[in-house]
Image (cartoon, rainbow, N blue to C red):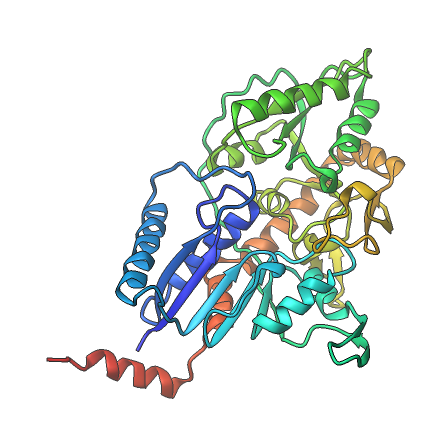
Length: 420
């Protein structure tokens, strides 16, 4: 018998969690002989919905309808063997005999106590997307008082944590309608928020290249969603930032709105593109960096948080060595405006890129261009070999359900039985 599995996730969302949810679905669909899939779709903040009418989006919508039909036939109380909940941990709940939480995890040095409490109470296992997230989940401890008044020291996570990274997804390049008038270009792909450190990314870039009219930075960003109102808000935000650089000669291009994977590939592979920039305070994984890296584009970033899973290649001594244009950083407490009760704790820290090191990395991307292109090619080859879809789908699928050979044989026999 197949396992009835409920996927509770923002499967139609144009967001990082949306892409994470679709990866999970693709993994399970590689073994539909094992899984009977139902979908409870979640809204994800103010993010938009995927617009393309693909086979995958049609499958998701059919699976949502399938859940509705099953719930109606079960008198509003459908039952499942497994629940897979793809969201932030404070939203985990007990739904099935086996409950698995799949989260991007945390970009700081500390997990909120509520996340640990919910994970312990509702989940049998956690799956996270990077070793950074796993480490922070496992190392975060609190001193607590139980309901009966008992004091507990070093209370933490009680369920196992497994890491499954993202897979490579290669796309054919599709030309993007953007008027690039500069011969030396850089790319930044990030939502404009405190964690992404966009103000310093842009300000320091302009200060470094202010006298060079042949240098440009393409900023693919939005504030909340990809609406016309958001475009106007983000445009005004960027204009206000650049107003302080009255003598600027370098170019800043704002790219707002839906961009296809093929169009992003075209940007990553553009012959004038020197590097993708990310000096954010922390990443659960860093999907745009990952995509740029497997397209062979050098990365200007910090060697900290989720990206360490793919920006490093083992050397002959099996030591992981970052293959990036390195930006030095300091670990310091998160800003007051970044504190988010139940998600980002005031006591947690994340990284702050050093201005001088970032500007040096920008210079060296040009003065040592051949060296860093070679490093990027080495990293690209490593990622393409070790992060294949087949490997990642199999890792994720077995993290959900890994039947023994005997159980598989029994399942095959059950499939052969015809009920008259």
